[in-house]
Length: 318
Image (cartoon, rainbow, N blue to C red; front, top):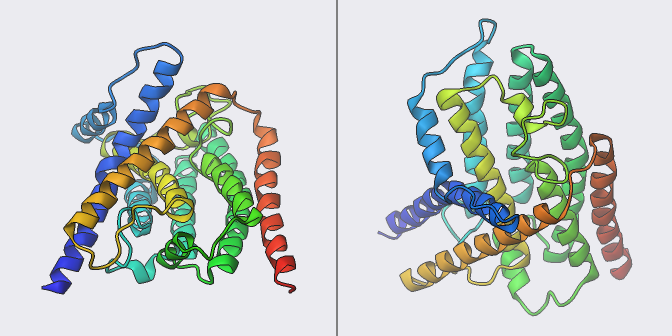
């Protein structure tokens, strides 16, 4: 019975991240609209958009290969698995042993690889531009993310997210400059990876400035629904990751019971709401930067992660 209960809790987490991802996207859009004094769409509009896309027929280009057809499902699967591995409301779940920060980075890198290939597959100019820009952002964001992992691993002594969360809850963590630098760098990487302002504007359809949208212009129907849902999952993943590593309060421990799990779910929803609010405020208050300034932005994130690691080496006398 314990095994069945553990599997059920893990299934609840997988279903929870899948169901809340479109709601988070709709929440951010609604807040951004209200901040500029517009009514905006309903927070449930992403659900309606996904259902509408699932009902539509798929239109494929004549020269689209099998990769173009398979890529949306691979992107969605990799992103969903990565999002489900991040502890949201509880630690010590069945698949907690695989919830390694490096494994999550690898899954997200695989999803980016297939998305870039899909953008190149049809051979359109906009797809090529979007894919090249996406790989540029990826080559700059991944080293910064690795330095963040090094910083957190040196502090917590592990790359397992459950172990990191438990250490962050303990009094031993204290106040560290390295953690502050890692948090700022992680927020910068999250903005870039999710194609948000100032790196990209998810609402734009101006061809010369698009990054993510340029790669998916040729998709329609259920294929586009899978990619849109994967993008929503990725946004939720990074907010969940920041909450797990830097605000792990409310996470239920293994075997604490249904009351602790319910409290953890409420705390997780509250963290998503706070993260969505901060994201909406940030995107409303800042303008999009030029594409050629993106390396400077992500270079700053890399330097912050590197500085955090060096500070830890100096403090430990290594």
